[in-house]
Length: 387
Image (cartoon, rainbow, N blue to C red; front, side):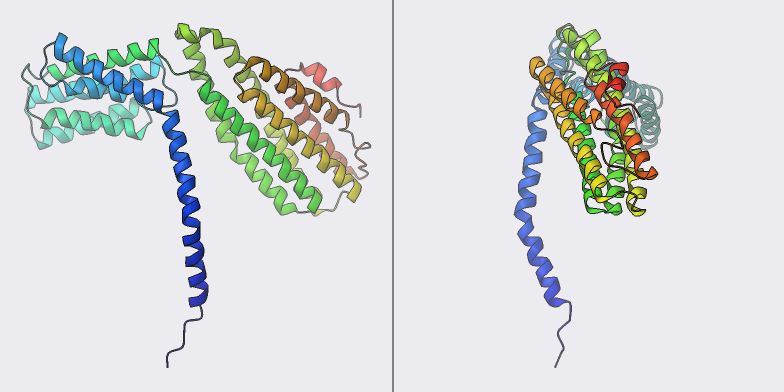
């Protein structure tokens, strides 16, 4: 008689749990897919219009037969990139056109063939990597050049396709200059994610103190370190958005708003850096049992309230209504004023030196957050009780 495997019942339970979680996973993926689809409606419309218009111009005005490269050049140049600007589209359009020109030159001088296609593909890929770090862009440019070498020559001659690529690039540039994407959308989304991550880090620090769990404090530190990449991304996005507000007449009135975002992200970055220092110190403080129960509760409440104020900062930075943004940021500032007035070791019932050091590290973070909501540095510092 065979003995049943000991792990069989456990494996069956795991399989049933996995199957039970599939509907939830499917719903989550569907929600994410719909969110991407809604966000892509306007870019997809612009890409479609650009490809169709470029094709019609090359077909009817220039008399080219089947000018597919005009449409593909416009499509690749517009794309779904998050940093789509006139400069970026120009880079992509030039790169795409260069790939087609290289293919036309190779066909004209050496003829069509496999080795010619290999040489053109290699050169096109290197040109693409020079112009843009995007993997998809390099792949598309390489495909364009391959098509030129491997497809039969067009009716109008080999450089007809190069002219089609120029048409596609010019159409995409015109669309980008006249109908750029709203420069406020991506910075808002990214700032909301950044502040939410910061708030969650402080909440985790407060819970670590309340539970005397140094491992949880370390997890909060890891969370804070993981947010630095988002800060760098926001800076790049704001640089692109600033370019749009300078070039596009329709969005010039939003230049001040983009500058406010840029100012806020600099202070949030400083506050997040100080927050990581606090989380690191917190780990040591918990391990050394440097706080009494009353002091731990006081500092945990301070950190928890700071996280709550960050929720108001996120609401202020993410809202589209200017008055709502002002009210939320003002409410966050008033809350931070109250928090700052409590940031003193004696008010938090801290008695030992290591606990005092922790409170002193929290104070610069509060100053940075006050400045992120619009306070001057001197006014923010003056709100802290003297040591």
